[in-house]
Image (cartoon, rainbow, N blue to C red; front, side, top):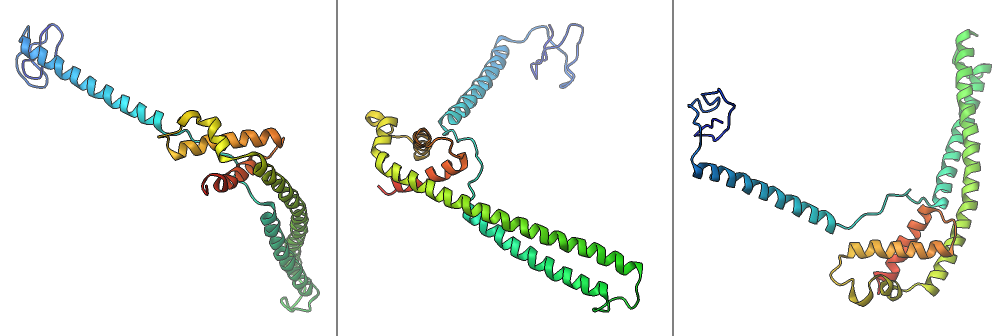
Length: 230
């Protein structure tokens, strides 16, 4: 097979001129040139393998993050938001409907004479303000439901706190997870993930059918008092 003596590219039989270097091809390269080209290729392959190995090592050392869950929303705060929305909708809806009614009967003289425009505008605006009133009552009802749920959640979290205070300890959890100083040299982030996973498993066994977001929130809050203040 012909070779280019400059760029060391190999060509098919019958080609006599290098397309890149514009020099005549030779039947065989010198041994040193071939060995030099092969060594350069091997060196590049070795560098690429080293880079891939380093990237794989970094990926293995990086602590695995837990799968995202729904963010916990306090029911009492949601109830307050719904109550505020209900008041706003009711006030706007009632005041707006009264104004539309006064315009329709002619007490507020927006239109000088009866016309289809007045009936059309008052009908559309009246319907819109009626919807405001309906949505206001719905938000008020949701607020009451959320207040009941908030009391139940507060009671449950109080029971969980008392049980954890009596049955969970930082030393006990670490003794199960990192026996005989197995956790020495481990990053705090890795320890955090393992500890919280262990705490969630223990609490879930005691309190069945817990909402995942509530459990995540409780463990995160309780972890700070259990491990970060010792």
